[in-house]
Length: 194
Length: 194
DNA sequence: AGGCTTGATCTATTAATATATATCGGGTGA
DNA sequence: TCACCCGATATATATTAATAGATCAAGCCT
Image 1: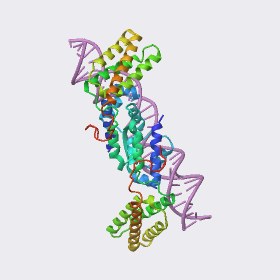
Image 2: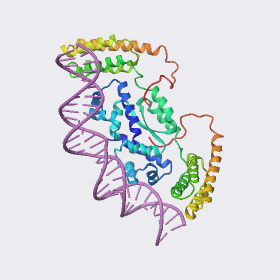
Image 3: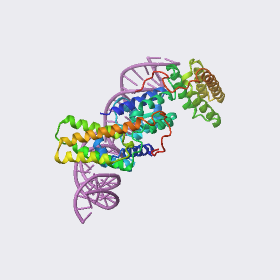
Image 4: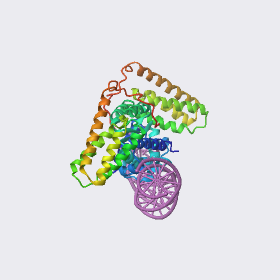
């Protein structure tokens, strides 16, 4: 039975891991208990589409019904459009660590506009995490956020924001220079997820 | 709540109608009670993916999770690859009538291989129902099947199979001649289903 | 070593789907 | 008119997903 359910579950799991989210993170985003997420990913749970939609939505995915004939083409497109095409493992960890500090930062009682700025910088940066090769900058950003959380300094927060902006700027440069000409939709890299 | 469920439900419904299947036909194909199908199509039922998979499978559809960014492209591809791009209404009815006879034929106690042959011919024929312009042949096929059901004649069955084969052959000829050169994926015809 | 996070697992309860079965009114064709 | 098929609906029952909450071993970092 339930082969389809399993396939969807593994897709969800790999999407979650690709984004560097823990089950509890996803739980907060999707409003689904962590225990349930675990059950879904391991045991073969025949979940309802409301649950599937909640999880997929939190992962920037959408449920679609496609004709069998079109499945290979759809798979190809989906692969090439993957939000974050496999960042390096340690980079994912660093980003996750920063993300945690970010969630603490949100509760700081400082100028809202500064908070919004940091948040947006972080969101933008995440889009390019796959291009990051050196994680030293990430450590520095994490430390700045931690300092902001510990001593409540707004200066550290601004510093973190500017570091994020600079890093992202460098990454964008890397991105637009070499390989933006071909734009092929197929065969980027051999990845997982059936 | 449950917007996603509704969208999927309407997709299922239009796919079913496009194939000229009644809820009871689909019920037989998918192994889901007709009452349940009705409930799904009308009321906002939060169905489980096993049900969704069963129905989708019977309609030659597959459940996929695609990145939000890729959704428009996927929709485009799906539209162009639609299994049966709107056959003529009366043809749909004739096919439905034949389909009904087919379900009766299955219970006939005759040579299994002949039954399988008829079934396959019918499946193949359905793929090309959108090209049928004259329904006289369909009436003839229906009558042959009915005769087989009434008097249990295996000859009538064979005749029906050969008629199906011939009709499909003609249709294939029509199909490969005129418009198989472009192969574009976009803008075939303005159809329904969001 | 101690603290913290992660994923898996347990319990108990609630809520909803799924199934079997039968019926109903509306529409259609013989 | 009669018979048939359509989709919608009702009832009763079984199954199980979903939730809230807590716990646990394993791994990681300080």
